[in-house]
Length: 403
Image 1: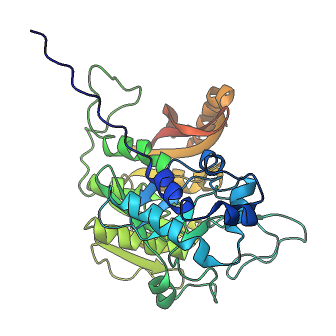
Image 2 (image 1 turned 180 degrees about the vertical axis):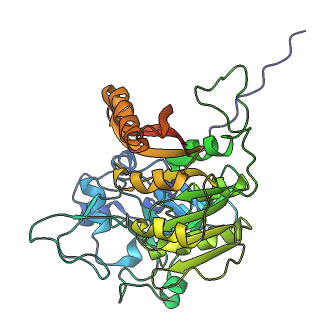
């Protein structure tokens, strides 16, 4: 006798759409007509509603473009905040059923602008000529739109945030590859797409499997204890923590004080010892911290490494992780490696230009060797698409030095 078929599992309702449907059911049609104009229906609003989200505890982040249709724009512009508060809390409540702890903040994401408005904010360079766009070196997410919950002050009263500024801001976190990352979404960016490169670094010193041979050499011949990694664009610790998990001591540079605070908090969550050194401070006695982060321009990195007494062969990785190009840091990276190490060059490159760019990068680093060593791009990692036809690439440059 054939077994009876099991009934299909009921399809789970999208928690955002469920919250919107429930919220709209509280409005009589006459009120919707009054707010949005005659003919507005529940189905038309649901059709233009967001259906995806990302959780960064305790925040829910909706994708760019959410609630931007003309009808939703009218609702969001309504002068009474009481109209929308029940909707936001219902969305958070529905999604919280799938998350621990409960989620309390809601925002809409948007891209990180490469340039800032021409009127600089406190702490930004004010020397740009009138009308010239100012580069967003701090990668501040100026287009984040908070919907519910306190995200802290939207502006800082001084160029350098104070402990009180840090205490009043919202801090969120997530885990990737078993490592926690922490940041203040109003002040610093987070890139989910870097997870692949973080995982690659964690496995960098493992022998490749027969089914997935690597084009680069492995570093098993160079024991890691006592070795260093240098990250010239540390951010909130994207790649710093991967190097630290490998057992390397990490010296890193970052100009955004909010990112440095996120790195400090993330290091504590991951149980890495960490020290922050400001531009005005001397390095001071070596406290043995696994991560030392310099809150200053990486142009000072060479001098700092010399003051620390870093010896030839100690640095096995240098990360140059600035997009669209990290070219301004290459010379510093080459000098830091000295011998037998990798420089990881991050670039945005058109898909048809990857091999040409590979040759250019190899030529620049090789030219600095001047016959006293060799620089070779051993591998090009395609991390993620940055735009149609453009890839975020990492060029692994292995450097040997003579003498």
